[in-house]
Every structure is written in structure tokens, then in C-alpha cells.
Image 1 (spheres, one colour):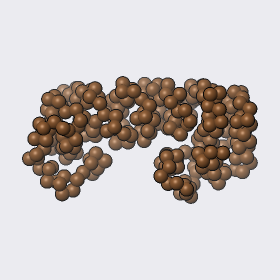
Image 2 (cartoon, helix red, strand yellow):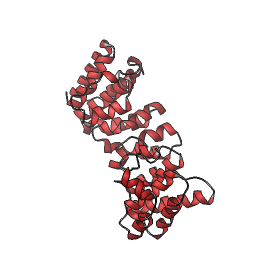
Image 3 (spheres, rainbow, N blue to C red):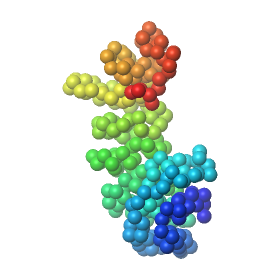
Length: 286
């Protein structure tokens, strides 16, 4: 048993019914020893009957390596027993024989109901060979169901690691359009790009023309790409009466190599505030 399975299995054993845990362990052992499509689908279905959606006592979970990705990710999202049992099964079969089971797991994802799909999307990063399931992540960008969209877009490293530029930009703009918490998108600065900066400016101008507000967090990716048009946007933010918008403009200019951006903030009142007590995008609305 790998460290990943050992960690998940230990939580299931401590929090669930002993007989059901033994059954799941036996099913995974059989599926690993003798790959079987029908048995995989049957086991997945029976987990829904044998494991309830009850909460796990995550406060009692003590990872041996607190800095490891899996423990931290599970502790952040806190799946229930049924979700965790399904994660255990899918991780186990993919670790045992990814070549055989990958397309079978993909089929399970395609047929999932909404609650199952939310779990799949949220825990894609822990699945071996997770890049094979990008179709589900990209398809989730088209939904207007907030729980489904949030599962892939928020607090999830999968898009930053596996989306191409177009997919990433689509997700970011959709998150803003759906008024999601942009601060929960992972690795925004790392995935910033010139096309997205232009899209952000265009979208903001559409909102302003319609007398609609723009979330100050929306501007986080633009700092590295401040051209003449975007500098005008920064000037507008810096002159705003809204403190969060001023800070967004200041941080964007601070991240820029454009001398004109530095001039915009050189004499701004926020310069002294930042020098005394630096603020970040994380504390933008504080």
C-alpha cells in the first residue's frame, strides 16, 4: 500500500464501520490483482450504500508530514466518508494499473450525478494520471451550476497545472462573471498573461459603461502587462474613493516594470501606507 492509500485508508478505518472498511479493502485488493471493469463499477456503486455522507473527524487527523500535498489538501476540503471511500477506490485502482483503469474512471466521471461530479472535480489533483481527466475540468467551465464550477475553479491547483492559456483565461473571466471569490483561485500570478490582462481591461470597461462595479481582486493578473490602456485603468483605480480599488491599482503598478506605472504610485498617499504596513492581494479587502 502506498503512502497516499495508507493515509486515506487510515482515516476511513478510524471513522467508519469496520466491516465496510474491510469490504472496501478486499475489493481494492481484488481489483488490483485482477483488473475488472464490471467489478470496478459495481464497487463504486456499492460504496454509495455502504458508506454514508457523514462527516470525518478531521480534527483528530494528524499527518506524519504536515507539508505533504495530500494531507493538507484533504484537511482543507474535508470530504465526508462516502467521498473519501470513492477517492480511496479510484486512487487505488489507478495506482495499481493506470493503463487499464484510466478510461474506466473517465467513464465513471462522465456518468456522475451533480454531487459526484463536484467531488471528482474537487479531488482531481489527488488522482494518479489526473491529466487524463481534463475533459471533465474543461467541461465544468461551461456550467452555470455554482457548486460544479467552484469545485474546479476555487481552492484547486488543477487548472493552474493543467489548463492551457485559453482555458485558464476562460475560467478566470467566468469566475468574475459569476461573482465568485477570486481570491480563492490558485496561482493567479503564476498564470497571468497578456491576453488575460487585455480581457480584464475590456470586461472592466464594459462594466463601467453599464455603471456596474468591478471586483478589485479582478485586477490581480494585470501588473506584469501594464500598457497605455491599462495604465489608464490603474489611474482610475488609484483615484477611486474605494480603498480596496486604490490598493488594487497600487499593487498592480508595484508589480509592473513600466516606468509610467511607478510614476503613478510614487506620490500616491498609499505609498506611505505600504511602506509602514505592506498590504497584499490577500489582505486587499481588510
